[in-house]
Length: 498
Image (tube, rainbow, N blue to C red):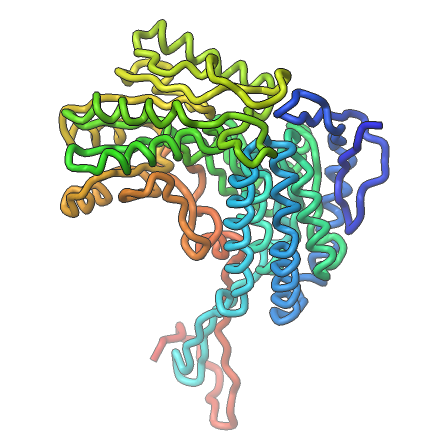
């Protein structure tokens, strides 16, 4: 009997009969491992209504009580992190060590949310005018929607959900239908930690569920991570409906290697950042910009390291790179190999020829390397979101910088160099939101905020950290006077701050 994955609404698993379902695959075998219920308009309304009903009570729950629940959730998540990692691997395909790293980074964000009492403190100005005090309050928005992608089914929901809940909001989470089980596991842990029914609801499905959240009048804000076209759609649709929206989109991340760099370090970083999680990361390095004369040597070192990578079932301890998430995505990524050759790039390593330690039905594509890639090629312009690494050549630092700044994306970038002056200049001049210096994947720690520039972000707020708390609250300023017996009489003049 095929396992069923259903919505989590008002503190329990939804028991209704879905009009539509989707298949959840095991990427390493190609077999269907579960059916997931797809929400219709009725289930969207049910989840939002549950969140709306829970909001007044949760908003008025003390910070001390909210924080206690967040700490309890953190302890449960730490205790069961290996179980959550195994769920991620079984549905996404990434290797267990990578899934464990994802969960650990998620825990960082939960720990940040545990600081809500400090983070939600307002300001206070005593005697701003004679006998008048002014102070600010950070108050929750209400019901918020979180729409998360397939590539980080545990971490990305936990970028948003803990902060939203800690701030006093209630949440409807819509995870990817490709790997939905992690979201239910997270909801169950929150319930075990003492979170009241209706504060966190999980809604599965496709565009019907997304549009339902974007247009429902009770949903006050939307947090989204996904491709740039969908991020733009979410932002435009949500803001047109009067919602606050943060929509994080796609990327084409460049890694610049200057002639003075340690090429062994750079080659290690390029392979790790290009092929970890089979390239299904919005912060993956997809373009290495080799500043001449190091191009040939760097390509040789990258090629040599790629030959040692072990591709296989992510549940096997010796696997370093797993399959892609679905057959359709695998075929899409593989189509770029022919496109790159046709455009004139040199195919150095063909991932279709990689040896695989796994079932023949899995969605496999080994690590692929192109050299002599030019900006007009589709392998350069498109977000491939797979294990395809491109090497572009530049004749100078200025040429490398211009290449990055001309790109429509601005999510992450890195520079590899031993020159502190070049590094300082790069971090100042590059038009990208997250910068690594000899660090290939500069994902900020939980107490900074994540987000790019240009077409990698729609909205004003980055994810998690200080900007996350700002996004999930709105400020109210109170001006108060408590009169004493010496107050004066009526005065029709404009009040002056004296």
